[in-house]
Image (cartoon, rainbow, N blue to C red):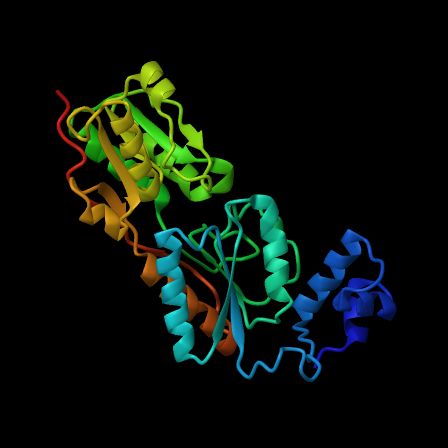
Amino acid sequence: MTTLQQIAFHAGCSLATVSRVLRGEGPASGEMVRRVRRAAAELGYRPTPPAGANGGRSRPVVGVLVPSVTNPVFAASLAGIQHRMQTASHGVLITQSNYDPSAEARAVAALLEQRPTGLVLTLCNAETSDALSAAMPPTILLNNRPVPRFPAAVTVDNYRAGYEITKHILAHHHCRILFVSGYFASSDRARLRYEGHCAAMRDGGHCPLPSLEVPFVEGYEHLDLFGAMERYEPTAIIASNDLLALGVIGALRREGLSVPEDVSVAGFDGIAIGRLMKPSLTTVAMPDADMGVAAAAMLLDIAENSVQGRHLCLDHRLYPGETVRMAV
């Protein structure tokens, strides 16, 4: 069993400093906090909570961070995580970042206060996130590519998905394609989809248009495309997710344009409402629920069986739909 003295020796500080950092009480520099937490993690230190500290909780829990609990994509992943954890008698604690990178570290810190068995994190950008700076229990990245410190990740190939949907639209003789997205700083998934789109455009002998970036969280019902339509005159629009694609369709209708007769539209995710609408939405369907189940299963294997984490990339699928037609 790891002792505080061992952590102090490993971190190169006093026993009193270790005690202050691990209790979260008293002065300590940011560098010292990182050193102590890193030493605790490397030595496998797990504090024993005092009686009643967990509010009478009788079963272990895992912590989950997603950008939004209202987006059907993340709701499906959460359902998959919860289903798998229920079979393992684990509870699930959920928090959201609202697509705000600066909020992620606070959200993860709140989860860590509950002493979870492990974490499942969907981050704005895993390569730059401050949420990964503290000592962490076993952690799975969901929807993010793995990073050196956290090689365990469950993803789809968003770059390839962006490439394939663009090739599909190019095959319908469109060459002026506008990519509308939430801010890339808030979603490395959207950025990768745009990068794949650009590669497909260049491979097809076309110059990609600059992306139009809009907020993720302010709602898409008032999306204004007038300036972009005037400037670029696109015959097709790719949205970085299906909810945004629905907002694009609404914005085009407010401009007196029909989909797909005047402008073709496509998205990503494959949410149910896109298949139910008329015309049905052209999209790349993602296995969101399966990704949640896979992330939960991998986390349990790492936390309980000391299995080595790995990068699991699930397949996506192009759904042709009816919102893309041949350009005239």
